[in-house]
Image (cartoon, rainbow, N blue to C red; front, side, top):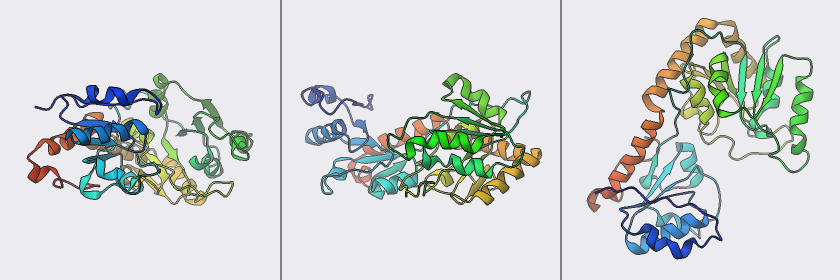
Length: 318
């Protein structure tokens, strides 16, 4: 019988070690998060000693893996994209891509609301490429920027928000700050398009290895019937279909970004068609229910007879 899997969270110095055997008792499997966190490692080791399969959800962040031993502790790796699985270095035969999702009841289009301008939602940090977006903004276009600051403690990155305000001076650009969750649905449905201009090299010349592992804001916009114009990097090409639900552009290419934004702003029928396609794709593949079903399918694989559980099933990216 599949009982509720055990989830463990905690500070590395928390007295979690002594509590683990009791916490894991009676579980069919153990599901933890972020392979390289100390609680996850302790949970995986304990589960292995007890003969319980361990599952980990990991976005693909970097870190030590105990000289190759750590990945052996987990029976399944659940990642948010094929790209994140590659970054994580998860064994393909034991990896399942579950993606993320959006709530299509909360994020939904409203035909009575007029659409105007471009929207950006994300942290105001250099690898998000908002400076490129400001440079690419077509003449007269309205841009709403939603996002928090203070993510970069050192110079020159610390002054990035100030640079953005300088670049936006005298233009139709609104900095809305970190909008509350309750306000996000309206912002998505009011925009002609969502722009995600993430870059691999910042305006300060720094290389960024991982800019976008998936892009949940892209899914939220798509559920809202809003097409997405984003950089062709990370996990974004796995959810944004070029010319179908939005457009993919080369990272840092200001001219191409401007062209695609102008195309949607100047062609409401095209923007509406791509927006409808985007919502249909979310309904078909990227709801939270679909994400949960992919997760449960990974559980079920592990609880089948050992002849099929260990390496069978679908590999990453399917």
